[in-house]
Image (cartoon, rainbow, N blue to C red; front, side, top):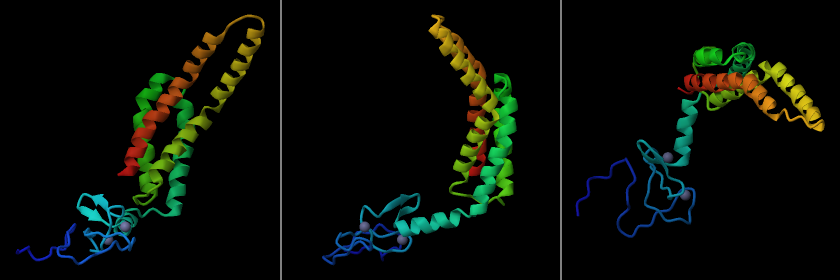
Length: 198
Ligand SMILES: [Zn+2]
Ligand SMILES: [Zn+2]
């Protein structure tokens, strides 16, 4: 049988009775090889990639080369997202139409600023930090509204003691106070995270 001369691109089944074993799990017999470094790997160790199966080490190295953000970049990304979304969340969280109109562009602007301030380096954690930063910022920017709501909720409890049910008023207050900030948070996170995820 004439098989074409062994191509470096695996997976290759080993013929004959020569036994080969996973480089990580020496007790597991395998004919699979990493398409990058060529070492034998078992099914558990093989990671599917667009260009064939690779060993975990090669996949990790590739990711490290892809993500170049420094710890400082992470901090900067979080600080920008948090710092900008406090005033934005406060102002644009006031009215639903403002939140809907400016949510996406505001998020895009935050993402663009983060992207530039971090030297356009991709970061494994940057998208998450930007998302959490915006969420926290909108929360902080709306602390006065949250405070108002808590006070009102306490009032409603007192009304209830007198047999007055103001539960629906509380529900109305919840929507009128928080619908806009929540809409703003969701819309701005979509574009900000999308911008830094690249
Ligand atoms: Zn490898
Ligand atoms: Zn293995």
